[in-house]
Image 1 (cartoon, rainbow, N blue to C red):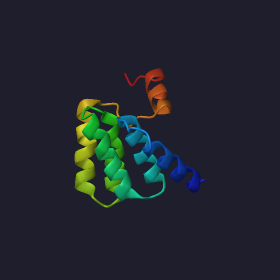
Image 2: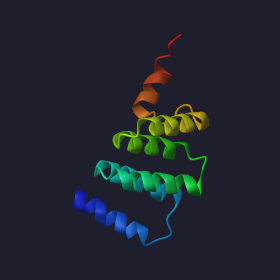
Image 3: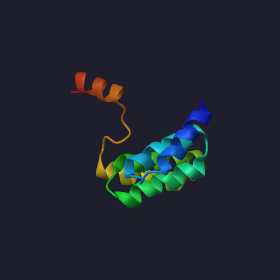
Image 4: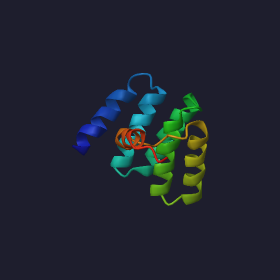
Length: 102
């Protein structure tokens, strides 16, 4: 399965990369525990689109996994400033909307 991810990454790099490509690539590298590559690709996504809040979440995850805790906090906070719901998955969003707290 890991070999398939690496092959997909190589094939995708042959085309003109987009912010979404780099976001997906950062996630794949995180799954492979190749955090330096995940950080690099999340940063590339942000270079293309600095308002891409989910890229800050991916960057924060990769930085945290690398032991760069303050940098991870900074990345998460930057993403939250753009979108307070960044990082919420569909299941938790669905649960929150169907069970209001007040």
